[in-house]
Image (tube, rainbow, N blue to C red; front, side):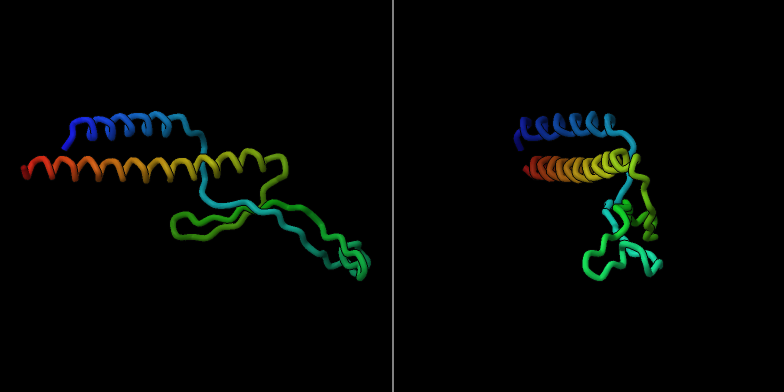
Length: 115
Protein backbone atom coordinates (compact mmCIF):
# COMPACT_ATOMS: atom_id res chain seq x y z
CA UNK A 1 0.00 0.00 0.00
CA UNK A 2 1.24 3.36 -0.86
CA UNK A 3 0.50 6.08 1.65
CA UNK A 4 0.22 8.38 -1.34
CA UNK A 5 -2.63 6.29 -2.79
CA UNK A 6 -4.63 6.50 0.43
CA UNK A 7 -3.85 10.19 0.84
CA UNK A 8 -4.84 10.93 -2.76
CA UNK A 9 -8.13 9.08 -2.25
CA UNK A 10 -8.79 10.92 1.00
CA UNK A 11 -7.96 14.26 -0.61
CA UNK A 12 -10.40 13.55 -3.43
CA UNK A 13 -13.08 12.56 -0.89
CA UNK A 14 -12.60 15.96 0.79
CA UNK A 15 -13.05 17.67 -2.59
CA UNK A 16 -16.21 15.64 -3.19
CA UNK A 17 -17.61 16.67 0.21
CA UNK A 18 -16.97 20.30 -0.70
CA UNK A 19 -18.68 19.92 -4.09
CA UNK A 20 -21.67 18.18 -2.51
CA UNK A 21 -22.00 21.00 0.01
CA UNK A 22 -22.22 23.51 -2.82
CA UNK A 23 -25.07 21.77 -4.63
CA UNK A 24 -28.41 23.51 -4.49
CA UNK A 25 -31.89 22.07 -4.69
CA UNK A 26 -32.20 18.78 -6.50
CA UNK A 27 -34.77 16.36 -7.76
CA UNK A 28 -34.63 13.13 -9.72
CA UNK A 29 -36.15 12.56 -13.13
CA UNK A 30 -36.24 14.05 -16.58
CA UNK A 31 -38.13 16.80 -18.32
CA UNK A 32 -39.65 16.53 -21.77
CA UNK A 33 -41.60 18.68 -24.18
CA UNK A 34 -45.11 17.49 -24.89
CA UNK A 35 -47.52 18.50 -27.64
CA UNK A 36 -51.15 17.52 -27.69
CA UNK A 37 -54.33 17.50 -29.72
CA UNK A 38 -57.53 18.88 -28.23
CA UNK A 39 -61.09 17.72 -28.63
CA UNK A 40 -62.29 20.62 -30.79
CA UNK A 41 -62.95 19.20 -34.31
CA UNK A 42 -62.38 22.61 -35.97
CA UNK A 43 -59.12 23.41 -34.16
CA UNK A 44 -55.83 23.92 -35.96
CA UNK A 45 -54.50 20.79 -34.28
CA UNK A 46 -57.00 18.72 -36.29
CA UNK A 47 -56.17 20.23 -39.70
CA UNK A 48 -55.89 17.25 -42.08
CA UNK A 49 -53.13 18.85 -44.20
CA UNK A 50 -51.05 20.81 -41.69
CA UNK A 51 -52.00 19.99 -38.11
CA UNK A 52 -50.37 22.23 -35.51
CA UNK A 53 -50.44 20.61 -32.11
CA UNK A 54 -50.76 22.65 -28.93
CA UNK A 55 -47.61 23.15 -26.92
CA UNK A 56 -44.97 22.79 -25.98
CA UNK A 57 -45.95 21.76 -22.49
CA UNK A 58 -43.17 20.66 -20.17
CA UNK A 59 -43.55 17.45 -18.25
CA UNK A 60 -41.39 16.19 -15.41
CA UNK A 61 -41.28 12.43 -14.84
CA UNK A 62 -39.57 10.78 -11.90
CA UNK A 63 -39.69 8.00 -9.35
CA UNK A 64 -39.38 8.76 -5.66
CA UNK A 65 -39.91 6.40 -2.73
CA UNK A 66 -41.05 3.68 -5.11
CA UNK A 67 -43.73 5.80 -6.77
CA UNK A 68 -43.66 7.06 -10.34
CA UNK A 69 -44.88 10.61 -10.77
CA UNK A 70 -45.49 12.91 -13.68
CA UNK A 71 -46.23 16.60 -13.31
CA UNK A 72 -46.42 19.56 -15.61
CA UNK A 73 -43.89 22.37 -15.24
CA UNK A 74 -44.69 25.97 -16.11
CA UNK A 75 -42.55 27.39 -18.90
CA UNK A 76 -41.03 29.98 -16.57
CA UNK A 77 -39.90 27.22 -14.15
CA UNK A 78 -38.22 24.97 -16.74
CA UNK A 79 -34.71 26.42 -16.27
CA UNK A 80 -34.93 26.01 -12.50
CA UNK A 81 -36.17 22.42 -12.78
CA UNK A 82 -33.41 21.59 -15.27
CA UNK A 83 -30.85 22.91 -12.77
CA UNK A 84 -32.36 20.74 -10.03
CA UNK A 85 -32.14 17.71 -12.34
CA UNK A 86 -28.48 18.54 -13.12
CA UNK A 87 -27.75 18.88 -9.40
CA UNK A 88 -29.27 15.46 -8.77
CA UNK A 89 -27.16 13.86 -11.51
CA UNK A 90 -24.06 15.52 -10.04
CA UNK A 91 -25.01 14.28 -6.57
CA UNK A 92 -25.35 10.72 -7.82
CA UNK A 93 -22.05 10.86 -9.72
CA UNK A 94 -20.13 12.32 -6.78
CA UNK A 95 -21.71 9.90 -4.30
CA UNK A 96 -20.68 6.96 -6.46
CA UNK A 97 -17.14 8.30 -6.74
CA UNK A 98 -16.96 8.75 -2.95
CA UNK A 99 -18.07 5.15 -2.38
CA UNK A 100 -15.60 3.85 -4.98
CA UNK A 101 -12.76 5.74 -3.29
CA UNK A 102 -13.78 4.48 0.14
CA UNK A 103 -13.79 0.89 -1.12
CA UNK A 104 -10.36 1.43 -2.65
CA UNK A 105 -9.00 2.80 0.64
CA UNK A 106 -10.42 -0.18 2.55
CA UNK A 107 -8.81 -2.63 0.12
CA UNK A 108 -5.47 -0.84 0.29
CA UNK A 109 -5.55 -0.90 4.10
CA UNK A 110 -6.54 -4.58 4.17
CA UNK A 111 -3.72 -5.41 1.79
CA UNK A 112 -1.23 -3.52 3.96
CA UNK A 113 -2.49 -5.17 7.15
CA UNK A 114 -1.96 -8.64 5.69
CA UNK A 115 1.73 -7.91 5.00
